[in-house]
Length: 388
Image: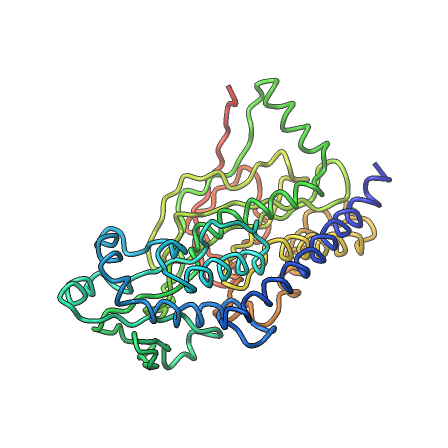
């Protein structure tokens, strides 16, 4: 066990370094492709720059696209994948390369599965659009959404229109954005797989043994959750929130991180009743854990985020001389190190921190329990699960 403890993180970081090098090679190749396609003139750009350029590409073809888009969209379906097959000529290749490049920037598997989508800003725009009013093509800017004054949008002639960021426009507006659900689903699976490389195999064996022996599994069940109404601008899409459960392995002095996806939690200002298993207590020492709520953003690189989180909590853990002396009081220390390490832009619209619940205990009821930052309120109940 001592040998595993010493080599696990370096091995993981070596794997991550190899991947970063491979990403760098891919990025240089794709950047050259972008420049050849006249999509980008600079090698330094982010997802927002890609959205801007693709918005121009879509705007250029919107007249030809409109009949097809109108048959695909309805009040029940305001978003459609922005696939290369929708476009014609050079634009098809531009959209395809943009999707692949964005996947790489976000640490996702690079393939031809479209990562962007087109979303009509409001269902009320369907009627004027179908009556012949020409739509604008827009994208969400970067930075703190409370500072946004205008939203940049393009018409079919390439002219720029500045729309009020706080007032829903009456003219139809199609938004170029990342498909947040698809991105989160793929990205969180990658994060959990990276965490699993550093997990305590003995802790996993405890759970497997319990299941095989038909022992009751002790869990905490998320019965209700609500995020505060943040009055986001009209151009902002649905939230993609997930939880990072932090604690300490029951068998060795190493941190345990788990990802819990919350695909239902897409809007603030309303109650959700997911009846979702949040914590498996077999995995945590002292029957205590923290829950950190995060929201993905356009610039989230899931592979980098996962390896960074592991590095932070592992180094913080190793800085504590004797964890058992402090007991569960060390868990908030690990979580706080994660929060402290977050770049300043994570606390603006570039995400990612939502709230944190410190020191949740096994077997405890938490009714309308507020997070430390007052952004989230939860009801959590203990739930014993019979695996058979």
